[in-house]
Amino acid sequence: MTQDELLPLLLKKDDRSFTLLYDNYAKSLYGIIFNLIKDKEEAEDVLQEVFVKIWKNIDSYNTSKGRLYTWMLNIARNSSIDKLRSKNFNNNQKNLSADNFVHLLDDNAKTINKIDAIGIKEFIKKLKPKCIQLIDLLFFKGYTQQEASEELEIPLGTVKTQNRNCMNELRLMINE
Amino acid sequence: MNSREYIESGILELYVFGKLSEEEIAEVNQMATQYPEVKEEIKAIENAVINLSYSVAPHLSATNFEKIRAELLGRNKVIEMKPKTNWSQYTGWVAAAVLVVGFGLQFYKLNQTNETLNNVSTEKNLLQESIVDLELKKKESEEVLAILRDTSNVAVALAGQQVAPQAFAKAYYNKTTKTVYIDASGLPEPPKGMVYQVWSLQLEPVLTPTSIGLLDSYATSTTKVIKVENAESPQAFGITLEPAGGSASPTLEQLYTLGKV
Image 1 (cartoon, each protein chain N blue to C red):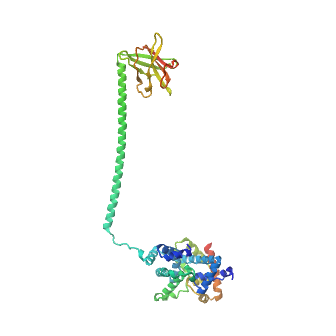
Image 2: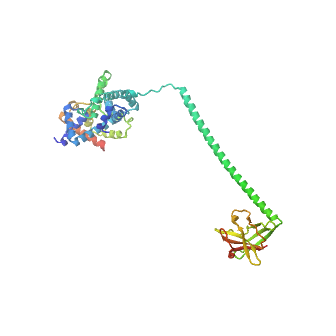
Image 3: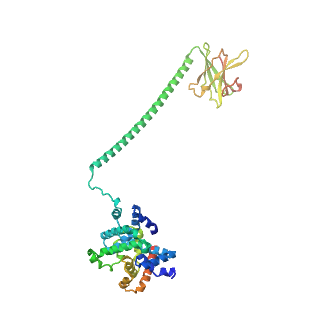
């Protein structure tokens, strides 16, 4: 099911379209939320909020906002960051840039139930540390190129291409 | 900028990550419409990050699916089960189950009994048949005995002839009633399509054979004592083997037995 096929179904807002949406994206969005929130139950609450927002605002989505997945990804990241900014999460926020998604792989080793994911995990660990940091900041945490270049102390002009090279490495590993 | 350079610039990754401005998004959309390879690249990048984020997600239980579904599709809210056990409802189901099982057992037993009954009555029929059979045989034997004991009957021994020297037969002739019985137990079984024919013979002044019947019931008769037609003052009896249905005059080459009265 491609996103072009999914969108008209989502607009119907029926049982089937919900199931399709959930099956295709819930786990990925949960991964993004969890990487920021670092608490399973809180992350589940945020996931529910995110689905409510997607469901309510799906009519306002169009391609001028990019890919449907990208639109949902932005909702997931923004909702998670909102949650982190609420007073309960002030302490945790300090760790926001210190941790990256790789340490989650070990935390989840027991609970991940998809064989593919286990394979990917092993490959991800082989990524260069610089790549892990870059993908973590730009994709998972939603940093701008400017913020990433400052955080990692790399020239702003090279962020885009370095990220491209790192993504190519990741894709090679996934496709292997 | 050609599509290759555009792809290599790294802008598509930022497009998928959601880090571009509206103008930049419009530009990428334009390129994706124009170049299929750009669109394919976008999908590949997206696929990679979906897999990546999927792999770092902890287990997501089915409860979440139900919770979110109930939240979004309010009308399909999941009806919560009452934690208290409804015993009256249970007993109803238990009673129903017991009834169903009970009916099933009874039905099974009924079938079994019916089957036994059928078997018994088949056996009874078979026995009945053999009783009838025995009675018939007994009657036949009694008849034969009566013929043998009847002093008015003359027993004529029919000796085996050239084609069948081992064969023999007996004719019982009643001079008053003119009835004739043939004891064919000494004759070999006739070949298929052939039948024994009994002749009463006048020897003087010329040899005149008169057919007094076929031993049709040879195969079915147990006593092999067979009644044939009456004969007027026969001087001898002969038995020949003839084609089925019999012949008008005896085939003398196939004369099995012959005896004078």
